[in-house]
Length: 84
Image (cartoon, rainbow, N blue to C red; front, side, top):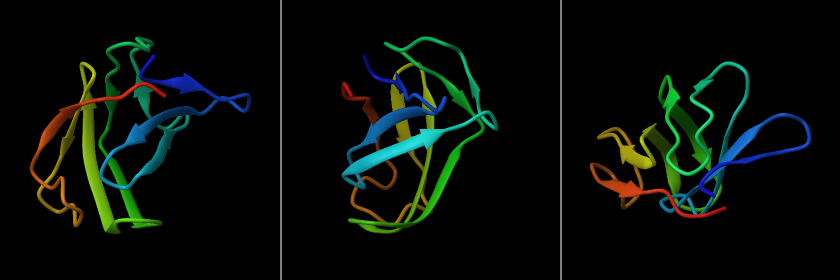
């Protein structure tokens, strides 16, 4: 499973670049597919705890696309989501 729902209704997924989970609440559209998820709009996480100041990505069809304004090592790469 690539996305897990928490008891308080958040959808969480693992970010390899930040080495932590990112989450989506009701502000994001989620297609409901926990094996190959798509969310919209993009995720913009600032002041990530482990790997930099900005993580900006799209999650589409089970792939995370790290955008060019990301400041960690996965900037510009697209990788499959890992199990949570």
